[in-house]
Image 1: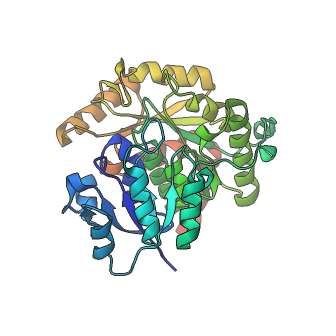
Image 2 (image 1 turned 60 degrees about the vertical axis):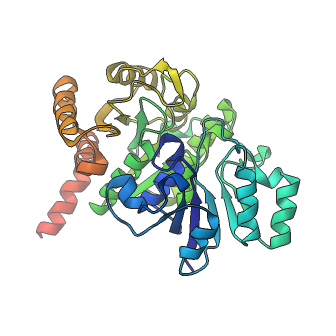
Length: 365
């Protein structure tokens, strides 16, 4: 049975802090999204507002309206805002309680764990619904330290990192993974944040829910599980934050824990300051690229753009400028598609290049 869901994203849909909602509208994964709640954009189509592509998902004023427009009553309420502090703001607690009263199961991506909130737990029990804290880690006794096992595997591992948080790394990683799969490669996606986990990624964890020394081991463990269970031709890893970011260490953990042999670097050219830290200037694309390659002992093989605040002409011009400047393939996967990035991955890894030749040979026969 389909999991019908309403996404709450008041005043944030289409913004950085609305990235969980944005991601689920582009790829709902497990869920059938029936409505988005954001009174500041009520009456609009969610897909058209986000990507200029109508998808029939209405943006509503409140919970009552969102339930009313649904042909079949939704079973899930997804909190779609991802603020930097990851805690509920004033009034949001009451919205969640209203959803519980409406007998909707709660999907909570915040660091504030509602399953440890006695009032919320009792309220959910009273109304016969469940609460799922996406970021809540497994019991501490199950946490893994880095073992070095990952050093023994030769499967191509590619991470999509960025110059800032909330700039499209997960979207790019998932689109590239699907393109490689479309071409016949066995692929696995490793989620490292709440949105990918909500979408139903089979492997991954919320990296900011673990202490640094454990998240590295946990990431290695997810890679090893995927390697053993799926026998993939290539593993795509979702990045978080930025390696140079003054407030986040997640990219450091991802580079250490997943040991990517290649990196796709995502960048928003028009962003002048870090998203949640307006007093900090954005790093240059070149400085981030050089830092990643030096720190991670890896190679950036393609650049992808976040086109926020860019015109079509600016996107085209930036692609040409960056390709000349960096001598790397550059694209915007949402507008241009992920083909160019998939090509760069196949070209970089001999095993993928050989498999492509074999698959093309089989087609020719």
